[in-house]
Length: 586
Image (cartoon, rainbow, N blue to C red; front, side, top):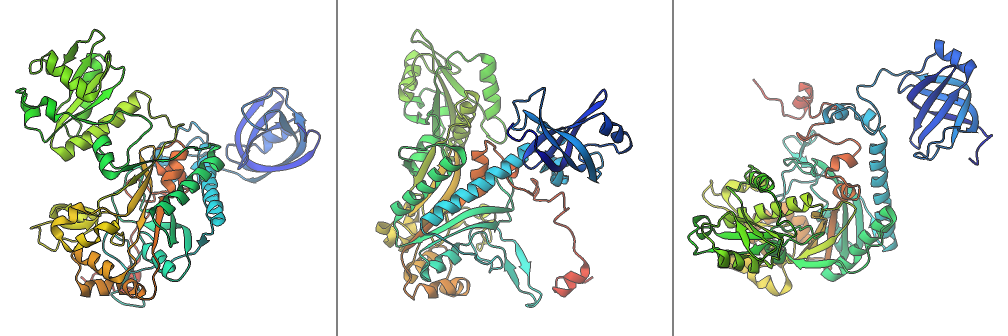
């Protein structure tokens, strides 16, 4: 209202055109919002010869006036522009979908015309949030003495982790660069070089199968620090996330961030990134269920149950829906057992034939279930059952409204295993090569081969029979059941790094060939160091209340890894392949 009476010039895109008798109202959209334009009777006649359509780019000159029908839903809702003159800067074809919040365009269509989708307010707000997170992270890290240093995108292909994207070199025939999965070795070399606090908001590339929270190219907040122990890293980056919450969301995240070991997370929640916005922990029920003659329990490696508080009144239809849900291929269970804890102290179960009231009471006691609670039980092979129970817990949390997107709960998961044993048939999915001809699996690094073991367990690196016992000096930050950051204290002595490579099946010749630059650097006064990398896209998506990181990337790929707007990847001219010595001769 303070601008009423001012003469202004506005440019933007036509959102809507509404003719009312002798006048016309136009909603003009630009990056900053919507402004209503009023075309009086004289200009209304001009619109008959120079009509406006949706998405026309126009410039208007006019005077700010008070609106008679105010709109409290937009910042400019109290004023409008009485247009004195207008210019059509560029006409537009009818867009393939409606450019507004509730659009009629499907995902594929909007991805093909992403430059139009980006005009929508909801997408603009997502990118604005992304920018705010980036700005807040940079501001905090700058205040903490971190230095932003760029690292190369054309590097050497290295083992471990996901598959690399490969780039052929024209000047070095038959040789290839790889795009970095992370700047890991470079940031360690920067620590050797004396740049004790490094960060970079950096693009990374992984040629892996996609889902809602993965893209072939993604962004990390990548950080490293010298002369630190685990506690220093955790405290520093708790501070960064608190700063982002305050700056971007206006949330004071007070109090300590909860911590739990990897073993506790797997035992109580069935996964290593638990959503702690609600309870419903897993309970091992093997001791109170076996021996009752129920074969499914008696022969199971694991019998596990969760308690849904206050759900004892679930109907048969609701329970049947849950049973069908766990039978889906994505979950893979053959069925579901339930126990209802009635208000009068009795129990009703789907396995009443095998468990009397005392048996059901023992199950309820083992779960600490109360009257009007519902116990849901799965059984079978341990790994499958634990994973399925974890998914069932999350599904129940969703159905009961316990996973509120407006509530944020941080968690540190620590003391991960240093290694995991991978069967030969699964090595490729871990980005590994099978050198046994499918005869046996091998130990691989759970994080990466530069992660240090717990200091007191270093000696175990020489005993393969005890690899499963070794804990990593590693940590993950979890937000609302999503891993948003992961890191570790690094190996910084050559002899220990060589032992780690040997444990992963890499002989000294291979280690020197692939990582000689790093091993050599460790001989020139490498300091102790550690760091962390945050999934920037994922963090933005969670803060924005979305399950898909694509909503927070300006030009994302689809679920097949394709850019449908550019139609990439695509074939290239045979002359280019010939120049790279990649042309297939017929």
